[in-house]
Length: 157
Image (cartoon, rainbow, N blue to C red):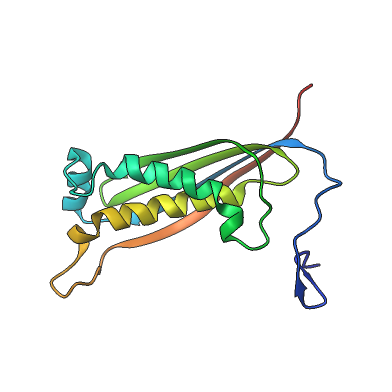
């Protein structure tokens, strides 16, 4: 297996200039475990910092757009669509992102970044409700962040 980002011990960005532009779509998901009372407060929109899902959605979209600034060997790309959605479950919230581009490289890193930033924002907005008596977060956890699907389709004329 050849490591394309390392050449003679030096990191480098992979040259994609010869690749053809294609429609590229990536979907990612992740989950944050939360207390039942926190989930109820999110549903009722009573969190003191504001509407958790609206702010987290916006943060996820903004994060996806900044991916190449955060991940050193990630190409800056022209993203054509970013969505971040949430499923409220009994013990937490699932974030789902879909990112699209028409280009030479995929958008799975952008989809993963969108989910990660969205979930970190959820945590930031509800952390006061998640603390225990000692100021720790024993049950709160961000987990299972993964690429669910990666699609590559030729461009239509």
